[in-house]
Amino acid sequence: MAALMDRAYVEMRPWSAKDIADTLTARHCQALCHAHGFLIVQMVAGEGEILALATDPDAQRQGVASSLVSELIRIATGHNVSRLLLEVASQNQPARAFYASKGFAQVGLRRGYYTLRDGTKDDAVLLSLAIAQGQGGPAPVSQGSDTKSG
Image 1 (cartoon, one colour):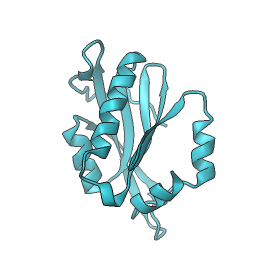
Image 2 (cartoon, rainbow, N blue to C red):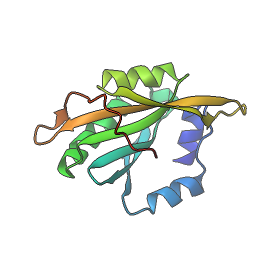
Image 3 (cartoon, rainbow, N blue to C red):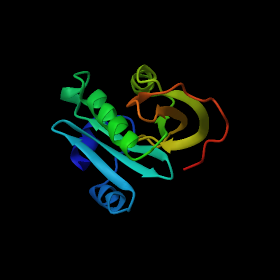
Image 4 (spheres, one colour):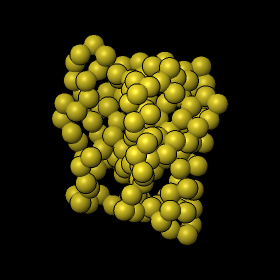
């Protein structure tokens, strides 16, 4: 997973194998895996937070990330999760467009949150997706300011 993340995260600093292993030992964290990608999520107290999503560059734009997010929504619905959250680098326009196409909406901004590979900083855009319970699909997103910090 760390090697895949290293290839996929062109601008961002990837997680180390130890970072991934430590995260996955946490009680509420799990990984959804695909042959060409993975998603790490933490689900607790009715919310899910996508901690990482990586797709092999050779398999990008082939539905891998879409499949992982769809599977996460299905699983989250079964765990009574009503909202998914994540942060994405403000300069990562392809990722922002991807999440927007899935119904995620911006609900916050964390200035200087990310350190890029070249040592510069980038803001994190906080995104949210409300999930309709019992319907297996996204619900309209609330633009409220009650979003928790991570």
